[in-house]
Structures are given as C-alpha cells and as structure tokens.
Length: 287
Image (cartoon, rainbow, N blue to C red; front, side):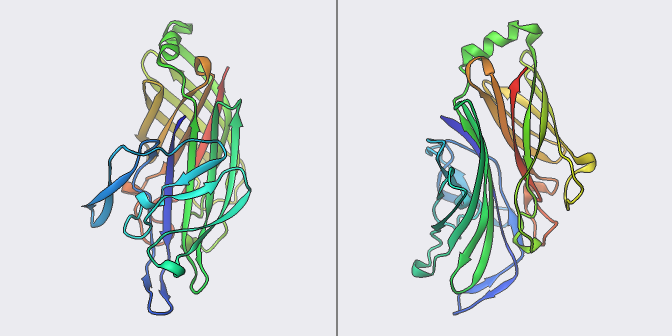
C-alpha cells in the first residue's frame, strides 16, 4: 500500500495563559508527502525549520487508520505524526507538542470514499484544543492511498486506444482551513473528469463544484489538475495548484489524488486569506 497526503497547519494571534507563550497568525503546508516521508533532522528554509525527508517512513498501512504528518509542517512545534482513525466520523487524540500534561487534543472529523478496496481518498480535519487555552491550531489533511497498478499494467495501456483514456468520478473541496477564518470547516462534494495520455505521460483534469457559498473557490467553481505521469504515479505544480496521485487497481482501473492551493508561493501565509486557502481530493474510474 502506498499513497500521498498534504497537511495544512494554522494558528491565530493569541496570548496563551500560564506563561505558555504567544501564538501568531500563520498557515503553511510545505509540500505533499508520500508513504516514505519521515524526518529526524531539519534545515532552515525561508526563515522556518523544514524537515529533511530521510525516506524511512511507512505512512500508509490500512484503510482504517492513518497518520497526519503535521510534524513535517511544523517540526519545532508538533513532535510526532498524529495517528487517527479513518473510519470513525469523529475522534480525539493527544498531540505531542512537548508540553507534557498540557499537550493539546486533536479533535477531528474524518470522511472518506473507497473504490473497490483498491483505493481510498479522504479528509481528516479539526482543531488542536487545549483544556486551558482553547483552540490553538487547525490541522487539515487530505490523502489518497491504495494498491498501485503494476508497472507492467501501466506499460500495457500504451498500446490500447493510442494510449489514451478517460476517467470520471468524484471530487472534494475544503476551505476555511485557517483557524483565523473563524468558521467551521467541512469538505463539499463535486465531480471530476480526466483525459489521460499514457504514451506522453500526462494527466489533464477538471474538478467541478456547485453552489455559491465559497470564500476562496477559483473562478467558475472549477479547479484544473495538470500533472505528469512517472511510472504509476503523477505529480504537478501548475496554475497555483500542487497535486499528486496515482493509478490503482488492475489495468489502472482507478485514478486518485489530492491537491493543495499554492497560489501564494509554498502555501505559507499569515492572516486568513493568505497562504494556502483550500485543499481537496479526487477519485475517478476509467470509462
């Protein structure tokens, strides 16, 4: 089993009681992580400590349990991955921030969609809450995981229909991922459509949503996915969107992935409405 995930972590200006310090308006996500992502050391990038990925991780093992890699967003604050249940609609787990009995609790919600037990896409989202300080941070995570199509299976698709295929399915979108948005957050559902060229190694997709009650949705309620295939996975960074995903099941039956807004470089910001503003998932079946 393998996969990709992206975690946005935010805080808002607040003086903590008991001399525990001062929080500031901030949000960031750093980059999309995969099943091997892990760290023990950091370096400084743009004034922040960033984990050095040692490629020793083992992050995707089950459709029922997961890890939110908030530690790879803010390693000087969150010391370990946050382990969560993916199948319970809500949960709470203590987060190690080095404060002992004062460590906050991640009070989260989880939603997911399964595709024939071959692929799963989902969200884990909620606030880090302290019994003495209230909400101190918001963590919003999106992921895709499953059983990738074999390389032989991928190669065989280059000889079918000139190597081209269409996929249609679902999509999700979540905003208010900054704690300073001062609003509840939950994913909304939409649709996805993709044109895939296995010969030239391209994934071209459109995620479409209805409704008008959005703060940060791109024009036309559509999000464009543009990525390059490498083996049985794909990655892209175009039009202010980071994306990653893969092909799952026999004959690349399913396509699934995640995306993160990076219209502000690196997704790093201060106040609500700066930095990364939304994220989501997509999952589709070959037609």
